[in-house]
Image (cartoon, rainbow, N blue to C red; front, side):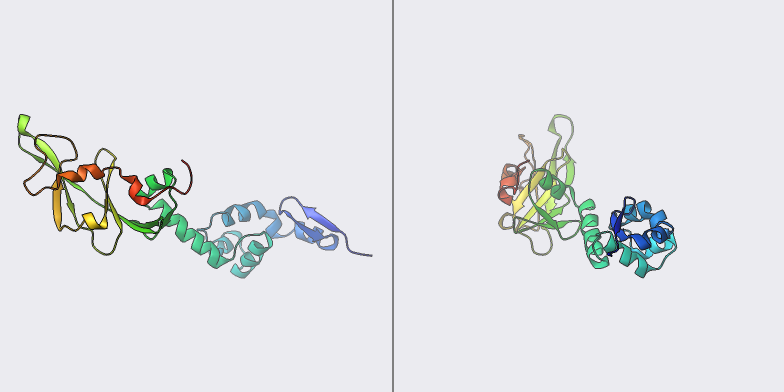
Length: 207
C-alpha cells in the first residue's frame, strides 16, 4: 500500500504521512515563517539564519532548497545587485524611471543600452554682485573610459554629454539664458545638452 502524503500549510510542501507528525515537532516547522521571511531577504546569509534559529548552516541550505529558494551563491549575487541598485547615483535612478534598462557596475557607473555611462559632480560658482551677479557650472573631464557622462545640476536636471563633447580638462558654462553666460573660456552651447536623454537611445519599456 503506497504511503499517503500530507501537505503542511505552514511550510508549504508535502511530506509522507509517517513523517508528518515528527515534522510538526521540528524546529523547522515551528519557525518556518521566520525562516521563509529571512530567505526572502537575499542579503541575509545562511550562516546568519542558522545562528538565529539554532541549526547548522548546512541544514539551512537544505531547507532553502526544499522551500524552493536559490542556492547560497545565487542569493549572494542577487544581494550584490540589490545593493548596487540601492546605491545607484541619481542619474541611473532617473534613467530607470524613464524606462531604460540599467545594469549597475558600481555607485557611479552603469551600462544603459550598451553604453557605458558615468555620473560626476558639477560645481556651482557665483560671480559679481547685485545686477552683475550670475552663476555658472564648472565641470571636469571624467577619468577612465565612458560613452556618456552626466552631471547633476542643483535644480535636479542633468547635463548629459557624449564622450566626444567631454574632451576638456575643465570647462564652465551658465545653464540659464543670461547676458553673462560664463567666463571667456566657457562652452556655452552645453546648455543644449541638459536633459538630452535621447543620447541613451530608446527606453526598453514605456514609463
